[in-house]
Length: 166
Image 1 (cartoon, rainbow, N blue to C red):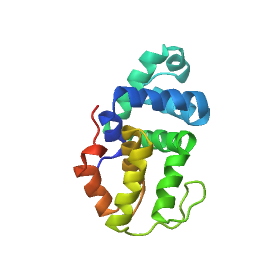
Image 2 (cartoon, helix red, strand yellow):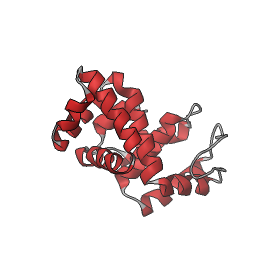
Image 3 (cartoon, helix red, strand yellow):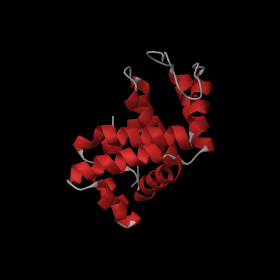
Image 4 (tube, helix red, strand yellow):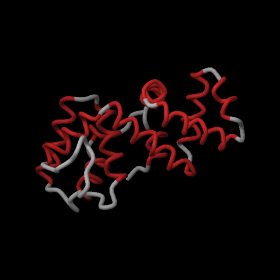
C-alpha cells in the first residue's frame, strides 16, 4: 500500500503538476502552508520560493514531497485537492457503497466492505473518470483510513487499471 509521499513519486509529472496548479489557483490556504513547509525543508524564506518560476518551484515541490519526511505535507496536498476539485468522485464512490457521508466526509467508516460492492464502485469510477485520478483517490482513501480495507489494498496492488504509469 502506497503512502502519500510515495504516491507523489509514482504519479505522472502531469498529475503532480495538475494537483499543484489547481491547489495554487483554488485552495490558497493549503498552497501557502505547502510553500511554508517547502521553505523550511529547503532552509529558505517562503518569499524566496514564491519568487521562483512556477515550473521550477513545482518541480522542486514534487521532489521534496516524494521523500519520506514529507508524508504529512503530501497527504494534506492530495486530500485538500481531492476535496476541493473532485468531490464528486468521493461522493459517488461512497454513495455507490451505501456509506453515509456529508459531502464526502465520513464519520463512521465500516471496517470492511464486500468484494462485489467494492468492485462495482471501482468500476463506476473508472467508467466515469480519468484512470489516474481514480487511482489517486482510491489510494488516498485507503491510506487515510484507520481500518484499511484489505480487498481495496489487493485491488490497488493487482488491478492493472489502478496502477500508476508515471
